[in-house]
Length: 259
Image (cartoon, rainbow, N blue to C red; front, side, top):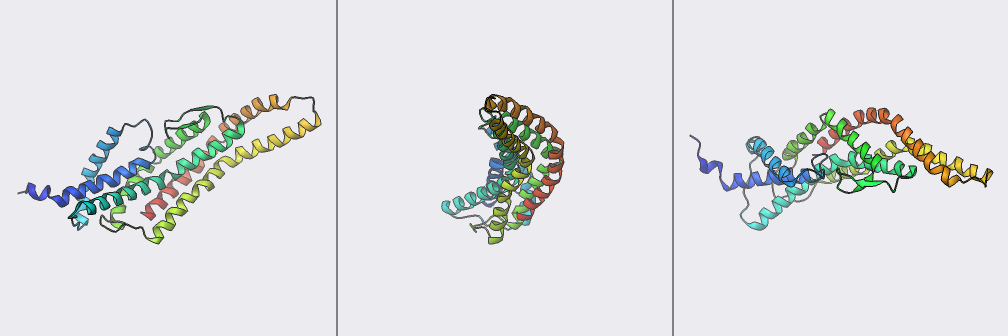
């Protein structure tokens, strides 16, 4: 017969709180789950339900010792939130890189004033950046990359069990820094084809202004660069999606290897 006092023991309650805290930290920065329109109540209930489902498996593999003071409990919960935050942020690097790359060539197009509320980040960004961000989200879901995200969360309890150790190992810190450094590399790979063509267009327009000083190049360049940028953006949608189909699985496996 099941003893309810064993199920609702202080150690089990604190262990459940730690799991919820780690998952909440991941939801705070993870792609899709950290989007602006999702209400906080939904995130809290989702964290509680998922933690309830994985609690028996984590408890069976872990010999957790409950803290005996409030400072110890605070350290444990803060550490769990930090680990979850790191997992979500590392997975969100590819979304940040996509937004940064799209911003690069949208500004080069002359759309820096075309700002609107971006529901993915809660801030403002050009409309073309939002288009690429939504495209990234659809590819992310189509590849079931969120399964890798939850697998990294579950595996983290084996590599980083709940306890009092506060610091990350040097290997983990090095790998996290390497993953974050990929933001600029990925964004350049996404933006460089369109950005390069628009930059060459600016150079040619500069030569044209020298050859024909009477021509108002400024009035010609604005609609020309916008039209050319939109045309290139549509042309490069398929190559970018094919690049993401290769990048996202490799990147999520890299995140799983860290945690």
